[in-house]
Length: 243
Image (tube, rainbow, N blue to C red; front, top):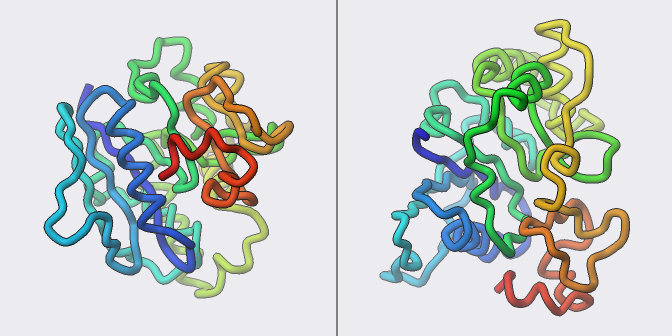
């Protein structure tokens, strides 16, 4: 497989940003099982380790780099940087992951070679998301390479026509990406969900009920409230994975 990229966004008034980025990086470092580079879109420089401090040891050769956003948009809409065709993460296998994701076990399945029967899911529906079964949340998703340029061009055109456009959208960017793909290619259908494609690999912290006891899934997704730094009060097991 080609190089592996991990893509995340830390923009805006996000509490404990350095802590979240550091935990995510170290979680992949421990559990991905191969080399990767993590790209973080950050509006302000993040001090991840003390001055002169080293990244945690990795036999895989993990790296991390911070990049400024190229558009002045609100919060999660900076995730659209993922679709920039000229971006360094557009080359290779890219995993987009939300900052408030807790990695507690093996996630090597995120970079497996998908079998032939899985390809239509990726190529015809655009992205795979997670959580409560109503729409595809992008807390963890593998973007379809074939749509990078088209998605980015349409997005840039729409925000250029109205600078406040991203603040007016009533839903997150992931349904928007699906909408663009359907609009561009006249494709019907909805994205598949991780829980159906690979059961037992990923779960929501709060759906259908809060995971006060430690779950068996290696990826635990936090969407909305509470976030991991808040949930450690009620779910003591989180302290092992979220430092």
